[in-house]
Length: 130
Ligand SMILES: [Zn+2]
Image (cartoon, rainbow, N blue to C red; front, side, top):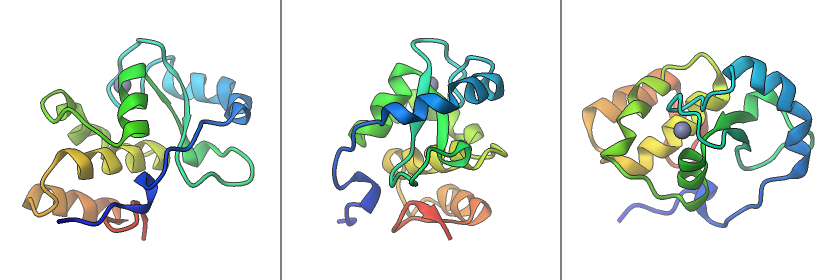
């Protein structure tokens, strides 16, 4: 049984402060979810653990479905096929969010996921960049 990764140990409420990045995030994402490109209730989402001040590299725009997955730590593996392209994003926050969701959706031993983790340089134990 895999250990619960630290980024899922407790539910953390999103901070109002991430809103200060709203304009920049909207520009970067063009108003779409940066994970699935969906347009449904797209809002800023900050990855835990939060830095003191909200940062672009720890925040992304995400639709209601993707935010729900990130918050609950549960992913619908069938719906989540878009993650395999999001994981190659050049935006660190998008890459990290996609990686964390993939770790939930996929078998951590799968060769594909291992390659993706290596390429993104993400530690599966911590859910952070190495
Ligand atoms: Zn989405």
